[in-house]
Length: 305
Image (cartoon, rainbow, N blue to C red; front, side, top):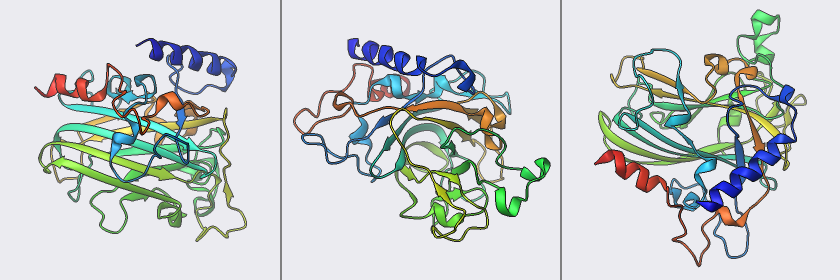
């Protein structure tokens, strides 16, 4: 527990270096992305394979859980209830791969994520250069959607019922939603229509400008963002919870930003700081049991009994 307090203090110092005017939503807490281990002596790499054990030692100060989510649409699910929907999400990054990584472990008492015409999924919005502004529905601000829809920020959604590609990118530039630019690996314990736990790891190339009309990385207007330590990135997460099954509806729309407009306006995101590498955040090859006292396994066991 002492290490969590120390890390929280460090995060506070890092975020204090940014002026309040740079902030978007949810300044009530600190948000940070951890630099993942790749080719670090004595520490196993984070591998995108759906096995989340690589992340077991990342302290809870970096987690996004159901307690960080706000239901902004239906008003029917009440306060966050881990017996209904429980989330653990961590954002990572690496300067050499120039990728953003996301892991998610989700318990859902009624899960339909692999069935057609359902809405159990994670929606992730990335505004890499923290530029803000409207990025969908751009015709309302006199921009051509054939060029600018999803160009300055990108909305990615899980599409686990799509056999060809389990990520869906809203807007043009759909080439960017497939490997090597982006991808997802996942596994699930349980069956559609009943209680289930989803394990997923995904990775994303981030763009300052992804022209909707682009068909590949050779587009002259394309600008891939260069990730660097200390940068602030706008990030929003929405968890759609569908307890009804097929029918194109959902019962809960839980967002990390507290602002429903996150799906089309980047001013509605939260500010994530890209932190430098800290070996203490990761399970080493020689110490694979160094998990926090408040580990996800203990928390989940508490509400699944």
